[in-house]
Length: 232
Image (cartoon, rainbow, N blue to C red):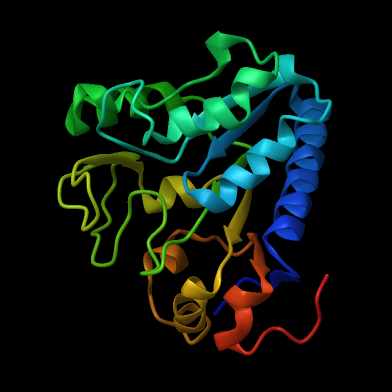
């Protein structure tokens, strides 16, 4: 089943606007309570729209810390890296201190990067807000259908069905352990996976999503699940 807090937006732009507002609200609350906001980013086109909007907002940027849910094992400046995408869309435009931006060092190879990142986030959990996206096959972060779970907080992925095959990902339980989760799903091509999730299929996104998550769908992504009855 989908999370109880599932919201349907008219289109990708409305989804991104809502996501930007919710991230800002979470940041204000975390900073008020703990003096820091630790945010885990997702890759893909849907989150990228949200990052572009965040770049235009005023926030207490000095208190933000940025992490990633997954990364492709490519050179550090490769344009297909999730970290490079976020840097171009948002992070280069705001004054978050560079030492508080923590890309996964996936250029070092999956196993080494996973070990390094597990040590980095170890004493910083629970992370305040975890962003998740979803692929057409129901994958999220670097976790694809058939992925096994284990006790490792961060894992090396060597057989991703989409290139590059080698990736690094926070594991299911790590993604689910944040204080909040925000899941962003946009596009008619995702509708079949949303319907399967609604029907109880144990897709990676279902396994990674906690009971307290907020799911934002745009109308095209919601159609096959029969959810597009009221738009926000």
